[in-house]
Length: 327
Image (cartoon, rainbow, N blue to C red; front, side):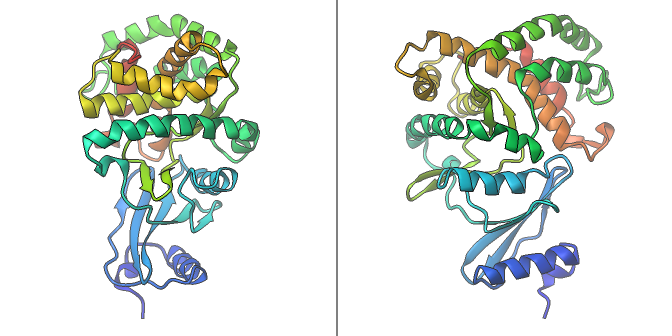
């Protein structure tokens, strides 16, 4: 008998794939399955089984590289990421185990200490897969290295429809003018960052306390749908912003500086951190455009005028260029 949720939640091919892959993993579907959570970039469904919950994810057209990337990262760095039970990269499907509690669920007094462990581990993880960059790009992971970003910014600024110029959720004409005036400085920031002697690597794209599982052996990062190849330090943009938001920290706060230095320590190679701190400042500043680009990519299946609650994401990240650096 077909489970009720399979009658309407997913296309028949996905239903068959889920059942087949669960059987291969020695599991059967049980009662209590959720209805799909549908977003422009993916559909996610929690499936109850006789051996705990699993998650089915179908990536949209802007993030179809994620299933391949999740499997590759699990092979390259076992234990550092959530390992999928099964993936179908051609169709953008993945089946994932339940990873347990997320970092966000822990009390405040534990979270900062956890970040002091997670961030240097993340740096070491990035260092370990530097040699995989070309493979990632060949499999569709976006190539957002600094040299490409001035062109990405120019393309966004030349698309007033995406920026919702003159609309309530978008840029004003004055803000668009100010962003155009910033372009030459942005080109300079990208050039300086590109010249730094640090190779590109993976950047998670959305590294915050909702995307880190707390495991028996430490931590596992999940949700790689915003990932790209770029300067590795760019990952601190979202991480530090999320930490500052949770703990009500102002730019330059001692807690943020301590976490920045924890992340930079594996990159220091026994030297000082002054230059690395400046490189990180440049990387996080440059990557504000990267976040706008990532949102536009994820929302590519939805016309700008129909993006609703997500419509301000692209213009909003561009306006972050006028905000002070956190560290």
